[in-house]
Image 1 (cartoon, rainbow over the protein chains, first blue to last red):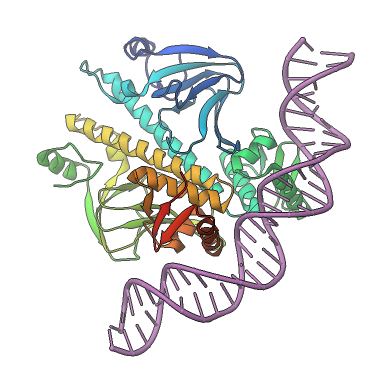
Image 2 (cartoon, each protein chain N blue to C red):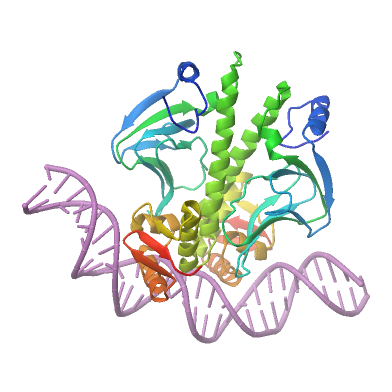
Length: 212
Length: 212
DNA sequence: ACAAAAAAGTTGCATTTGCAACAGATTAAA
DNA sequence: TTTAATCTGTTGCAAATGCAACTTTTTTGT
């Protein structure tokens, strides 16, 4: 049984029917392979069955930006901005299995008018809404004007999610810098200042928020 | 007849039924009034019938960020990030009329199972997808590390939309700085450098992209 | 268990940016 | 139509940031 946002609340039989009707296919990827890009698998939605993946963009300058992280059950793809001359792609962070579903099949009801298609569409709405929410979080962070404020906003975001003042950065500090869209060295320096000022305490990727 | 993304492709009769069934109400706002915020009209979707509105956030520091602009037919609200200690709200930029629809009514089919409810749901998906697209554009811009690159990315975004190398900034330069999340003075300075370097030519809010 | 690769942690220095504080131009209001 | 308010355009200066170039530590692959 698949355990993912897109097909939740479906019975096994319903899922099997949809699997055929929607022309769904599962593909395995090795670490560092490209799962999806402007040219590869465009117009499809990817569902992570196992493993981890990252949405990454490279600038014309070669600047790397980490746009999102996907884990088991997460859904990605379908909607990208086709702007920017940069390359945007989803990369396998570990070996992973991905289920591909055509976006058009999801949102356009076919003549059969299967009742469980409604469920899928409602799930898709939830996925889109969640993505908007996540992007809003990201925008909140990026609109902060200083490195310090970006870091603090990010840590507070994590803290809210885990309802704890002790948070764990879910990826490397190198990636964190790319996620916050700042220079890694400048970020490390600011982390030190934050520690010096007694605002945070860190040990590896564990960060404890002291003030507030 | 309403002309908006949310209820497009509906007949007048269908719309009238939905208007009652969904408990929709139209409200007029004077310029600078708050249309929607964390506390006011949360959980509802606003549709601009006439006038213009802006999504704005104020930081704990008082830093203003312009998050989005809405014109006639645009849909806003329903999904905000509840993070950040800042105040987020939709403000009337001019006098305007707003139609409020409860988000739950849109996405949850009722027992009557009206066929035209499908249309509304499909419209909602399009709206969410479009919003994701717009947010991606914004993130593209914000992840640029320099003022210069932010400006150029923004101008190129406008240029793509209008398929022209001559673009018109749709709001004041003061607002543009808030939109790009940079200091206005620094932005004006960079605009001057861009002109000096022969990369752009400007006259008022008209910007002509010379290179590429 | 070892070698190689990646990440973490530092620092000096040049550049960019934000901030404050203006004057002039334009727009809105009385 | 005059006044007030907002927006545009500048500048000096201090502070923040990015960049390059390292060393040390940790992780990964064989």
